[in-house]
Length: 462
Image (cartoon, rainbow, N blue to C red):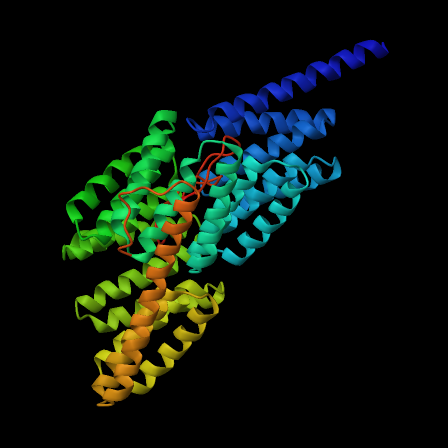
């Protein structure tokens, strides 16, 4: 009877492995089906005590739930996988679970937590020699720094990732190209941004990664939005959302709605803008993405400011600020403080304006957020100009230009280092999103699909 038991266990392990392989094979095309296979693998692995198969089932379920924007469930699955991989000393699995948890925190805009998990993941990878996945994690960590407003740290991670690809002779992952495009977008080099996004899109199409194609399209649409080419922006964003709806990437779809709201707002088509913003707000609340709720409330506060509905503007800013403080979201805190300062500048209330600008400045300085600081000092300049203090107005205007130059220097550093690494495109000049993901296409590897937390500052390729 003993040999029969061994045969049965082997057969069951093979069945679990097969379920996990099928789950991984369909995740890019049918997330719900992938999750179904993983759950079957988990159930069978629990019955048989097959730890490796159980951990892999948890890991893939985490990927699926993150893509479906079920973030609490995703973290639970990843943590279950993490405990097992640690117990059986599977460092490869451990690194994937840590990266997965970090990606969820990135999706939720918990940037410092995300960075801490990426740090731990890279520490594990340093002991395994898995340099290709390390390059992917560096790309993800770069995106976390970028979303956090620290473009210099972001760029350093991207360039380190680029150097690994270069040294190993591996093909550069399209997620890295996408994220470099995001840096250019944030620093105002829109032509450079389009070149990187377009190159990423070409690679994605060759690999037939349909979901990631939607993320790249959305990033291109966002770039056109910054370039004030609103018709092209709406065209690309609309094309992206068709794919997202088919694939089921709920969070990315919601971020595109928010960007459509911004596009119509820039076109002064306010009814359409309000429609898309409200749709985004509804879906963000449903998936419990409170950071994006605060961000959208801020966008709507700015819209109503433009409509001279200052009462509604203040209410929206105030609600967004409360949420940002509750979740310690300093990125949105800065933006909303700045919006409220602008509101009070309108009414020449210098005391309240200065208070909000001071709060915004301290938070932005802590993150080396040059783009935000440039706007803050521009508002300071306007505020002192209104009060007749022309000397202080000029001093703050000089600081505005100082931080604008810092942004330009980052773009130039990117260009020069990319040149040294043999990856500079002659068409990219120093004129100066949506993440693909898991590598978080933010940076994707074949290990995990990309989700993009699209479009907070730019579609996240991860």
